[in-house]
Image (cartoon, rainbow, N blue to C red; front, side):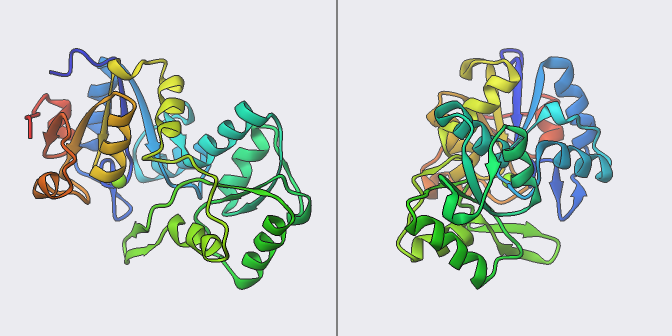
Amino acid sequence: MLEKYTAFLLDVDGVLVRDNLVIPGAGEALEALRRRGRIMLLTNNSTRSRSMTADHLRSLGLPISPEEVMTSSHVAARYLLERYGPCRVWVLGEAGLAEELIQAGHRLVNPEEAEWIVAGMDRDLTYRKLAQALRGLLNGARFLATNRDATFPTPDGLMPGAGAVVGALEGMGFPPEKVVGKPSAVAFHVALEAAGASPRQALMVGDRLETDVLGAQRVGMDTALVLSGVSQEEDIGRLGIRPTWVARDLEALSRGELRSP
Ligand SMILES: [Mg+2]
């Protein structure tokens, strides 16, 4: 059943990693999938750049190259560059987001000079930073969000995600003009392009129906829900989001143990 796919887009949390540990069998599964086609990890985590994500996964024991990673931080940087060219930006987010924006050719400036406020998850969010963002937005800056995941899984339980940051700006009267991470089509198109695959040739593997599966379906990809993370099989009917395939985990998927839900 995997024969038709030449590329595999894989979510990270709940698919490869859980509680900062590699999910058993995930490393071997990656190897098996690489023999079938191209691997591209697609994560909404905006706190890291592509190379930081690869370094992090290697430190956990998963051999991943930066070319096999797509983050919402990079998707945001690419989105701005392709549509508007190099921009003056102010970042409400962490180092990985700033790194990707700079690498893409954008310039980090004060909020007052910014054409865009780019916001992602920020574990050092303060009232002062919100005031700075407001300064920029009142000055006419546009607002791009990396993603709006409500929560973020950690070994200590769920923590506030990028949605908390985006919601704070929204609460000041400024909803984002664009959100580029999953389930936005932008994230999938950028990841597919990096993988050199068309939507028909690629399989999206994820653990969240409402982001990984829904978003991939919107761009015409087949999808596989793995049950090693957030969504469980009973959620399929409840949410009305039906993936092409269900597998116990990535290891089972890589061995072709898939079934129609
Ligand atoms: Mg996930």
